[in-house]
Length: 555
Ligand code: ATP
Ligand code: MG
Image (cartoon, rainbow, N blue to C red; front, side, top):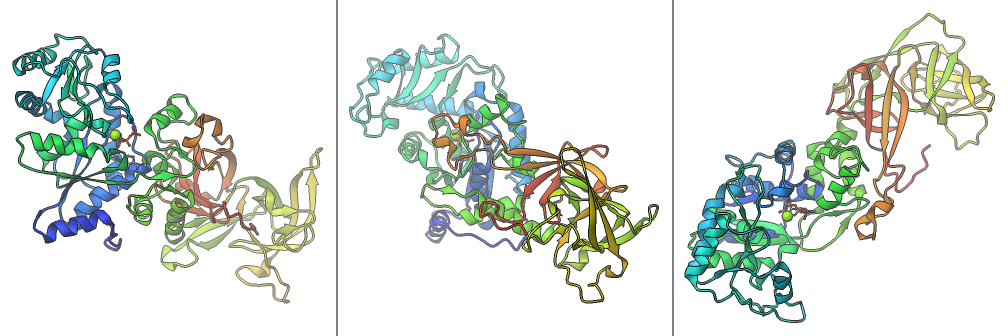
């Protein structure tokens, strides 16, 4: 990772500074604990940058731990994609990959310890009874009739649960805390349930699985995590986190701190909704460039550094907010403006014939790859009698504001000559099919000698040397800033979130590399799609040249 990325500060880092100053810790240890039940999204990137960033800056460690206690919803494909995405973002986890399931045997032992201390019991109430006895935010709960089962019986029942003697849904191991607690999570929460499910790591070894709240804190303690960072919805659960750690014989005392989730405009970040978009084919897959997943952003042409920069700019607080998509766009746009080589591509081509240019001649012009960075060199651009220009760059008549090509007027072809539109040919519907023009051979890289003023510049591609390419233009996936707030979020999908163009691109783009952003002059920043092939080029628009949501005059 670049040394130049400056160090952010936030309330969590201030807590760490204090802990270090007071000698509470000498080495800082964090973890990123995804559940492998979906692909990582930009919200996870916030958590990744926070956890791995702290480990980096404090010379500590950050573990990657799969929080895998829900085998039915999890999949090895997700495990693999998550590792790939964390690495791609530029972070390296400490030592080996961890799984909560690595600790199943230890977790079982701690559950037995709680039972032995009279702090846990096996409850045979039906799920409905358990729900009813929980009470509500307004009313206290009620003690289960199984709450005072003798310890020896509970130990035997729990062993039978593990041995597969009880059917799913017939019993739970519950902590014995306080059914009148104002915090629902403290009303004798479930610690284990029966589930005859195959697990991607432990196979068929277990038919009981520990609950998140029991697993997470103990996994943190086993790994020696000093600061366990999670999102605000776990604020109440911190009480349970501490209760478990305080009541088992484990030495380390991790502390949980909560920060606000990232919410991003015009998209959804709930895994359940993202899964729905994929499974119902509203998008082409988890890596569809319109998806807010890391894989989607990668395919869209975002770089790891632009996502890290975004996470730095949004910061870490306890305030709930909805971040503007334009903030993310700005991060990649600013980076690509510096780094992306320029090229010419015509997205909606119309043919232009330069009648005073010889039919068989190919003039090799040289174009600078970057206007502000000579070190990026030049490339060859063939100039021929027949070229394509952008259909919207030509008008038969226009006022002075239109600084492109107008019949009878002049315009400069980018990296080439000044041309003048002489006449047009149209189809039966009156659409211009061919523009006939003349060029001024004295104007390569200089203004016309007689002081004629030519203000407009348009891009072009040689008709004979240009290469056909499919270009995907992406827009917001949803029409409203907060689709998750709608009753039916799918009803707000933007039908124009993908517009496909059959373009013609300059020949140098035949060899464009995957993962390298390119500016198509005047059209935006693009990248080679992962499905692009030499015989069928596909480009994705990463972002426009300007913030199109503050729509500026394109001329
Ligand atoms: P779900 O949408 O199913 O609730 P989750 O957010 O709980 O998913 P996890 O895989 O458990 O997903 O998340 C791993 C870590 O990433 C957790 O520490 C979680 O707090 C954090 N995280 C998830 N979403 C966001 C978000 N939008 N902003 C910041 N951190 C997030
Ligand atoms: Mg979760």
